[in-house]
Length: 325
Ligand code: ADP
Ligand code: MG
Figure 1 (cartoon, rainbow, N blue to C red):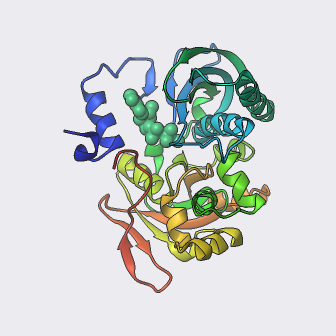
Figure 2 (cartoon, rainbow, N blue to C red):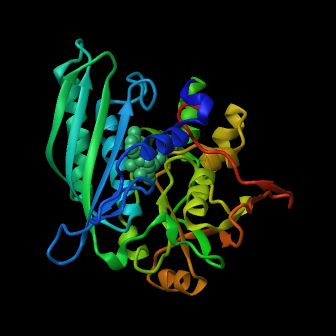
């Protein structure tokens, strides 16, 4: 049996977790959220956050599209995004490299320049790693962070009646990728979204205290809404016409024969945040000058996950990036 046959990446993780020891009194949240949450770590009661994410050549980046500095920026941003999604602050980073025998020293040094630039931006310090020879280049980062118990935002915190909001336009990374794959030259906006994205640590500290469930959008909006519903035991309704989509994404969709809404729902790697929040708290956030967009709401009934299309038709909310599926 192959991984595809059991339903892909998430089915595999579930099977592996069930055959492992995964509980401990200090493990507040283990497998299943954007980062693990570990108690008993700081005298002031803050929780330790730990996340890990890997970029693999040919799967996550191509040397003919991305400079090594861009790979470095993206590898840090995708990890910081997971800490931001917990409501936390990133701290220390460990970098594990698989390098092929023909790798130029300059390639690795420039990779690290990109990482250093992103680390300065997010206040992250390099604290260790591992370096090994292999057949394909891979960059795996483990990032630590911390969060106060009040600001901890889990995927399981959503309740019916809350709004589902996103921090920015979606589909940019997928649109940039589609243009590159079609041999087209993406505009700077899409090039950056795909090759050297940022993440939303700029707004997460303001959102965390007033939001309920939170997750970062790394696998497409549809997948992330479904993760929140799975863990909160709720349903959701997403209004396709309310999903913020940049004009450059619409143009890229036209040029490549794609649907811009599909880029947003299934594309992934946008590294915006998706969170649930009461309507009153959304107003509070906006009074503080944090602009977010409601794209739907949390509903009763966990099997009730609906996408309402611009023509009013209702579909099951599905899609999202899944390795092996
Ligand atoms: P994210 O997209 O937020 O980085 P993932 O979808 O990669 O999260 O992972 C979902 C959850 O599964 C996380 O809690 C992660 O720690 C866990 N996970 C992923 N791969 C493995 C693995 N091989 N073994 C154990 N846990 C894993
Ligand atoms: Mg995540």
